[in-house]
Length: 375
Image 1: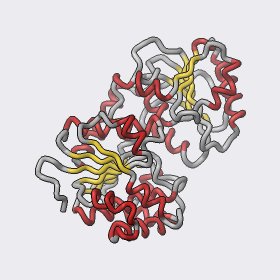
Image 2: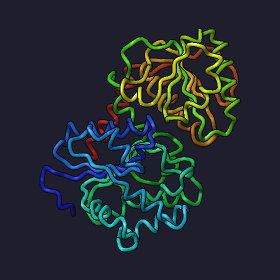
Image 3: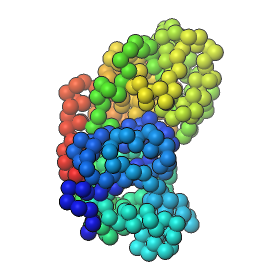
Image 4: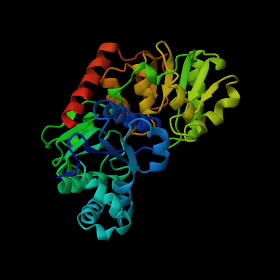
């Protein structure tokens, strides 16, 4: 069992912060703020792939938060990225830390945690198969500490058929198992007690996450990673759509969810859009997302879809692949975003949509209920 004194529990969060990535940082921020309010005296560890940048971005959100990369390092140190082999190595290393001597101190920290919480996102699936080892690390560490196990808002697809039994078996060890979309529920179909409350960002879509000054009439967020179509095709579609909507270029804004990755398409079209404004990642983290009711949005990014729709903006989600982003965007549409899905770069009429306040209250209430079960 944990050695933490009464009232001073140790909570061990696992996430994918510090890349940085707008959605991943906000999800972690949401949970850290929750714990700062409900458990300010507790120690919180966030195990993430980039602890240094995470400290800079998130370190002020809880008075006792600390950052490490132990679980990630163990996954990376496995001799293969094949999920079964990663899971096996990670468990052996946690049971016998001498197998990973550089990470012994971190393994011992995890072995004292009262709660292990794999926070939401779409980072544990077949796109990054070795990340399934993160679940194995949480399970193995909890066996030493006696701590509770929780995963929330997980997007587990796509996942290879031969890895599904492993994901299910690991999930059975968890006290709280929550996913964000129907395909992920199907992966865990025979695991008892699975809930599907949607993405963890539904926990907090409050006004403080948005700019309060004047913002453009149309916003665009177009990524250049994980594409199954060409960047020039996307650039051309953006220009064609803006022409069809008849929006003056000085009333267009581009927003960056991942630095540089979400600027490449803008770089291809900015000469055709004089006066268009670019909002870098650092600015939206400092000043909020430039989203408001009545705007029109064009986005490939999932969390821009979620947050813009939560602000009341209408939009079109451009799907850039068939197995990952389709499920993500569809999960928001099914929960009431009202956005349209564009799966083939076809032209469409100006979009409609935006979450209504009642739907957002229900979605947040589900997350609050989860938090109470975990903590």
